[in-house]
Image (tube, rainbow, N blue to C red):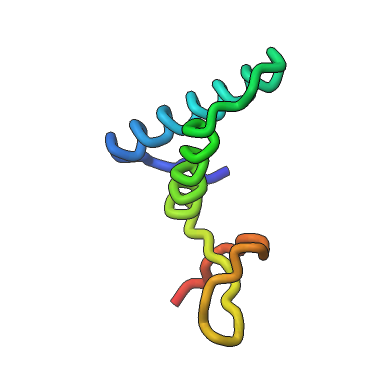
Length: 77
């Protein structure tokens, strides 16, 4: 298993996003309506995970990312 070393900024981003995800899960368990800002903040979790693990989306024939496809690990250059 590979160990990932996080910078202080990455640690802060991880905690913020993990706590936001926890709050959403708590709201679902408690059968509470989801708060829009919590759902929107999931976008930052998406970008954080993408950056941290080197993920990318396949591109369409025009060179744009296909956001409906699954992530793949970036290939080494």
